[in-house]
Image (tube, rainbow, N blue to C red):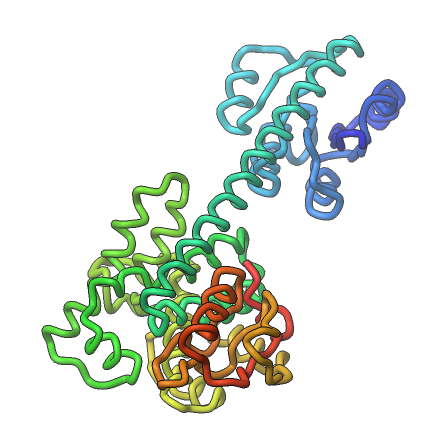
Length: 386
């Protein structure tokens, strides 16, 4: 497949000439002027390389490439111009984050070589991003699965919270959904420092003493400190840290951030976590949303609207009864999974993954599990796939 290149210039003849010169080497898209270029970035991307003229009416190439860097940050940007003064070159590189600066006329062989180098740079960036995302998500899922075997009631909540957080984030058209998914999966890690009795009081919505409140409110900081040692997930750590922060600025951390200054991931986590907590107390979904709306200043109204819309669009999933031997990856437990002696093994909302299925089959063989199990496969986007 040929690398996709966008060329922007206000000279139609030049665009036609460049298309003829380069079409054997690349998938060329041309745009007559900066506005058409921005439209192409939004509607026809992604592009490996974006080439822009410097001198264009209404918006020069520096401003255009600055906009391009926000719309398509991974695309490599190249300036092609007949105005080869040093000041313009420096401005273009600094403001538009330009990969190369070429002058007109540019020999076809040189232009092809530079575009190939730019396309290779784009592929490297994409490959690194894909590797990072897949590696992190796989490692984090393994971590949460392992932790859930130690404390299923607490860490099982993370899977449920992630379902709602993902659906809300998708409804809000949030960028980089994997970061919000990851923050949700890791949001409960700080619970490892809480006494079991305190964790149970929180899940039941019981009133906490002042000392208990301080201990509970410290759990996001504990989690953030643990996660801060993992490189390149700063946005995830920030969302976990601010998950208890109220939209009006109240709560922890005790700083001046409020409203849109609070990370979107944290605002979504706050709604998803509190909503799930209300459901665990036996409230219906509509009653739970009503209580969230009654808490003035606690939540981002846009996030609440998104949650309500998602709940309206996605009805209850079909419940199935299965034996432990019939579990398959992706099933979500609609009721708590318990041993025959009544011991809690997994909470409702937890997703059946290979390590979980293997563990349940081992317990079924040795201790016995209360069957049948009640499971469902929720409709997108409330599915719990990572």
